[in-house]
Amino acid sequence: MAMAAGGPNGGGGGKMVSLRLQYYCVFAAVGVAVIVLSLTFLSPSAMGAVRQNLGTVVANSGAGEREARQAVAAVVAKPELEPEAEKVEEKKEPPVVLFNFGDSNSDTGGVAAAGGINIMPPEGRTYFGHPTGRLSDGRVIIDFICASLNTHELNPYLKGVGSDYSNGVNFAMAGSTVSHGVSPYSLNVQVDQFVYFKRRSLELFERGLKGPVNKEGFENALYMMDIGHNDVAGVMHTPSDQWDKKLRTIVGEIGDAIRILYDNGARKFWIHGTGALGCLPAMVAREEGEHDAHGCLANYNRAAQAFNKKLSDLCDEVRLRRKDATVVYTDMFAIKYGFVANHTKYGIEWPLMVCCGNGGPPYNFNPGKYGCGDLCGPEAKVLSWDGVHFTDFGSGLAAKHAMSGEYSKPRVKLASLINGGSKKPSSVS
Image: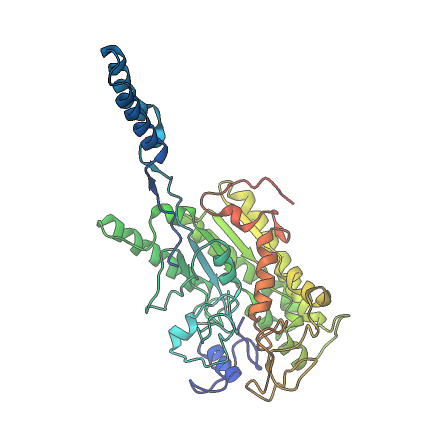
């Protein structure tokens, strides 16, 4: 989720400036896929059998003609009786293919590539060792998901240099919204990009050329969504009596996106709800309002939960209408709020503190000061990187919980949906 002080899409500035100011610019601007290869083995047991029988022929060379013929027959027949003597090929598993739609929570460098924005260190310091365009010190949740599935990081759609799309595409862009026309790469635009990508990929195969993803890949792919955070934050700046209607409209547009993807062959959907927006340090330190027992803004969290309830209901409706599709909703609010409410369980001392900020605990966030004047250590157990986006540590925790299935409806593990996983999950909550 990309937001600035003036709302979800504010800010401005140059292209090589302090880290958080770069983010504000972003907000305004708005290995190889894993293929299990068949291995061919020559069975040593078969060769041993041949040598043993040849020895029998030599040892019995003075025997009668009948015995000799039997020995020779054994040499010839033995390999035919042992299937190990033949080359054994393991069955090829189809590659892991993912298509992700979202905002900065899952942007792996898309907005940096699209805008030519040179984000500077310390972004990317903990895992990659250099800036990658992610608004974090390391990985985002989608990176951990890819790693768990033994495939490389998902490349952004608009990052042409060095990209490998054989395991799918990441259409997520920082600052994106569900709502049409609010951001350059809103959800409907991302879905249009997917439709174009699929058409061009299949055209290549039809012409006898190699494309990034084939027909089977699109059919078995997992279609993921993690978007709506910026929309909910925007709703909070409108009259409260309009919130319900606006949230219904936003969720309705997500439904339209799912329908278009379904019409284009998507059958496995993994949908994330929004996180605990009222627990973002940038919100807590900047916005006024009622705080709950854990120091989070109650009204923002109520709006996030209202959005999630509508999104969960939408997933239920799609699941009922599309009997041949698997639609899994994952409650990211419960996951992320749990990190704050139960922070000592995870070794977190200051659950609302920023790693890259200014001012020190409890927030280390000064709305009027940019940059990392006070930077936490690379190994520090801090959830928030810049006040809005998670650290590598925080994203790793969130990904582990999300993939477990414990916070999903139906309760299925993400890995069970890969490569033709059951269309009808056995465990339903």
